[in-house]
Amino acid sequence: MRHIRSNHSASDRLALRAGRFFPFLLITLILQVLCFPSNASAQTEVEGEVSGVWDVDGSPYIQVGAATVPEDQSLTILPGCGGYPQ
Image (cartoon, rainbow, N blue to C red; front, side, top):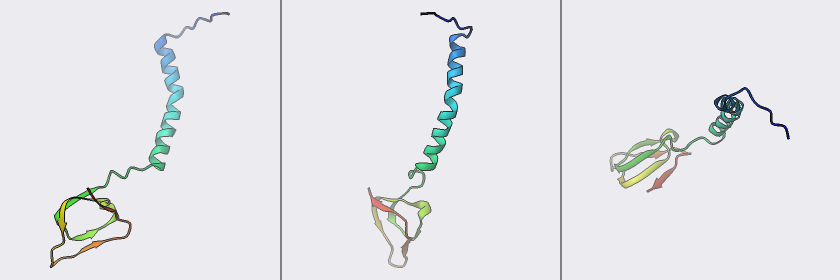
């Protein structure tokens, strides 16, 4: 078996491998962000007196304590919202 000696140092060889790997890593990251968006970015914790409108932008609404709607007010929960007790 012949051993071919490289003129590249170990760090050069590592940089060459990383350069070949980077496009694969970038494509994988982009696909992950597009296909599996995070639901944890928008979350609203609720407790106490609640009223107004719950919409998808604040969803999911996580009940972290006792929550009530005052008698003189209202709470509208729009379609697509999630509300969960903790």
